[in-house]
Image (cartoon, rainbow, N blue to C red; front, side, top):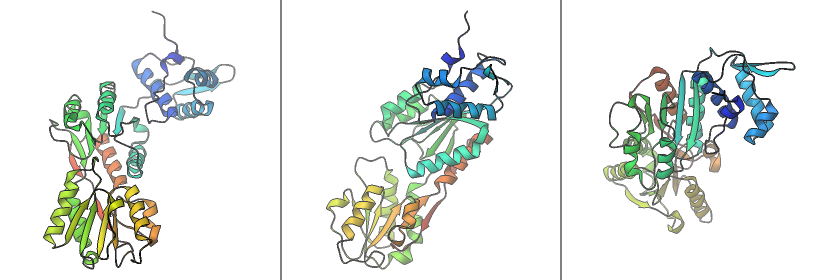
Length: 343
């Protein structure tokens, strides 16, 4: 059988969120592991591969530099690039599947990449809370990976997600962010305790909250946010004799003296601030703001927005440690209150 050319073995997936240069690196390492690329084989030139894949020359060059750093390829004058070392092995291949892109998700990804380093190849995909895309991505990537790291959040159709996830060997599975009812077996989990976390965080803020009489949770309808947040919020307000309200649309909510608002999404935070600014109410004394999820700009806007947030970088680091150790433990992500001038 005619040997397939290396240039035909290297492909990039336009649906993958993994950088194209890393896809080139991962493709070469995968073919070395399969034995289809051998020591001494000539690699396509940077220009050839750039044209073949229809990507920037700099992207291919970056991939080749990474392969050279790993000791896999080398270059000599008049010969070009060639495979120098096939003894190199990266034993871990991680399929990383996030529901969406966001600042907290970037922290998870950065920590995972930093902690794993050269120990793993990571293929990164996003399904935009769409169950059908989630199913298609997983179905098309079975048995190629040592680990599947998944954040399972859906707007519609998620009630069948456990059936899809149950097709993954449990020793390869790590669920992030939330538990998913119906998933069987012993698998790793790095989870957020949504109900207890918001209760405990608000309890830690009680001394600042007592100057207000009503707490309002801005909880968008038809969102992927867990109902446990609403439950924990409601229990806290009832246990501590606060008036409370759960609203879906801050745009139509009047701003009143003595109210505290907890927002889930950044767009609602912007709208809330825009609604407060024309009033004479002072943020932090007459009306309060607590924002879900810590981000850098919340440290500076309005002299500081109080936040309740999981430690997303630590979440990624915990995931990496579970991958490296082969652990199937279920570990809770740290959650904390950061008090600033908005409360």
